[in-house]
Length: 237
View 1 (cartoon, rainbow, N blue to C red):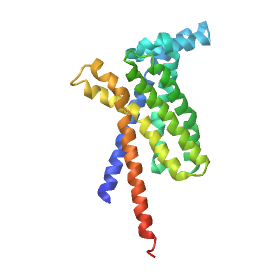
View 2: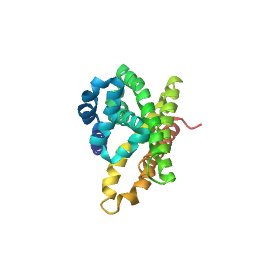
View 3: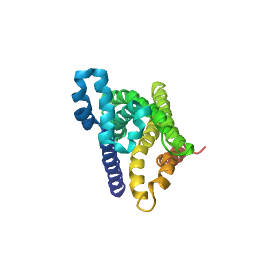
View 4: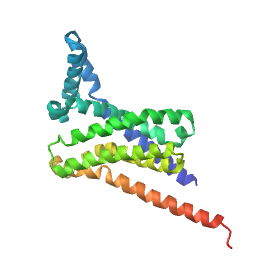
């Protein structure tokens, strides 16, 4: 039991740590956007300042995606901001410690509904504005759609009073959210052996499909375990 507990704590620490790094990466456009774009442009009006926040923030803080500015720059900025919030808050929301806090878990859950929805749905136009094959762009888009779908199913379950189904789908939602972290872990590792142009298209799928498979395996394991417990608890006729 102690060994399993140690592994669980180590896993959660890794989940939190890499999620935090991913969130910081998503937010890195905000300081330069404010410093180089928003505040210097306020005299020209709020709308101009807001656009300069997006443009200068991405150009100075996230140059590798600056090609998105012309077509989906604002959408990308919204996605990065809300995606960063989602990635940093979801590990807290699904943790046992926070789930035991009753109303805190409930209210953070409702706060995350629009956060995840906006982050997931803004991923889709950004995905199809990439410079990669359509099958690769579709991978990113489908991962985002599944993220939103898992959230929707989980919320429908809790509104119907099905706590167990809600819990399972929130774990799935968290696994799909971790796709953003998987992406940031896989890319630098794979670039040790391959050029970015070779590996990047596949990451549209590999950043989230293995996560889903792990959760599906866990679902099966949990259902099998519960069935065995029920069989033991039921007296033989």
